[in-house]
Image (cartoon, rainbow, N blue to C red):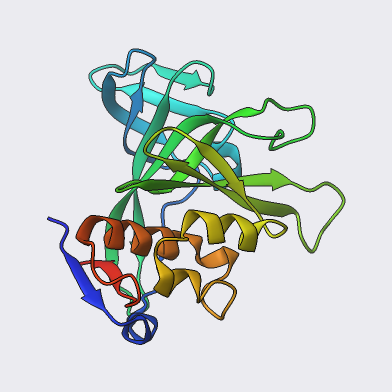
Length: 218
């Protein structure tokens, strides 16, 4: 069971744990798909890397041996359980979830703009999705990424390096303690998952908006 713990931001940064995925590409792992009626179908997913996960998923329905490939226009989403290793070498299990969403551009040249987006934060007022785009002829930076934030009314907003400050100032305007930190160390684009989770925690608990607290999963 997930338990939320409030800490100061300094404590969070000191206790942060790095997780490294151990599930290899091509591994058969427990998973599911969400069909277009909204029904969750359990079975086995053939694990892939984050870039190819945006394009399609190979799924074996529980009780069958047939492998079916689904694209984003065919189902609402999918997920699978992967193994991760923390900084002390402990292996844990976590679920990786993708949902079908419309991006502002293809993830690959000539590809579709309807993709499976990795859902990084799912509980609360905002949901956060991460989207990767392949950059051809750039060995040092083969991919670039952006985020999309979806509120509880279904509004879908892109957040990238160019609009990061302006968009986050609007999204987090009522949580003063967070808004005033935007752009500081550990409050940049790469930290969007934590900021969204912390905002959702504040929105749910309603603590003093001038006091920064963080939400951790235990």
